[in-house]
Length: 295
Image 1 (cartoon, rainbow, N blue to C red):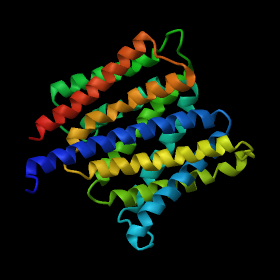
Image 2 (cartoon, rainbow, N blue to C red; image 1 turned 120 degrees about the horizontal axis):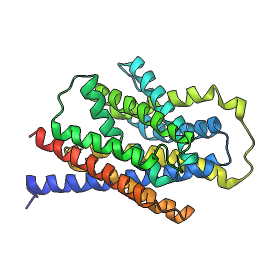
Image 3 (spheres, one colour; image 1 turned 180 degrees about the vertical axis):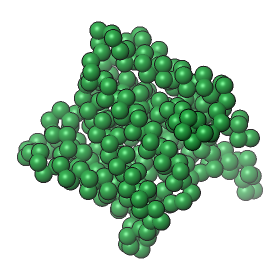
Image 4 (cartoon, helix red, strand yellow; image 1 turned 90 degrees about the vertical axis):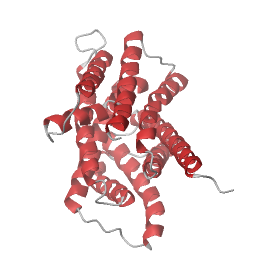
């Protein structure tokens, strides 16, 4: 007997969750390899190598599906802007991850959807319920709890994550505006290659010889984990259960804690753990609220 609609929906949801958790593991690996490579390779050179490997791997997946033709885009200006925001987010992300432990950095990145809600309400004039405002306020206050301005552990380098958060919010809003107007794989293709071209402007001025094969391996892992993570997310969101998988995006915080402990022996302090938990809870509750509001 063929499986019924309920069984098919369950399998689709489970495969979407598995793809999302796998993508989050890839992104945690990306952040860890970025931190390791960034300690020995100049910033623009590391960014360029990451985008190059990511673009080549993405092209190997996209081009066979387009008959080895360059994918066409209907919105080249949006593609340029999205790639610029992506490159800016990565730039400040690289700077942030040099000065911050992996779990705390990942938790701040995880607050991006809450910032998107804030901008959507204030700029795009989208209606936001009182409960969602509470979740946004809780998430943003939790970012401050992790950074703790004025505290003994705070340095001005920790302003970098806030700049990264602002650019990431713009990137996500533009991505949502483009959704349904461009094929996700085409958008990912252009984002990678345009970001590669942008960082090519600065890479020659800081280029240094890399003698260690481990550093080359690290740069390849950066590109592979980024490309694989984004492609897994694309496949997850192509399924009819995006609201189901959204809360599982916060598993990246757990993977980052595991990586930080395994590689650096770091465990967040009590206040940071509280902040990370509140960000994850606020984001997951916001995703659940989206399900209720769209029924």
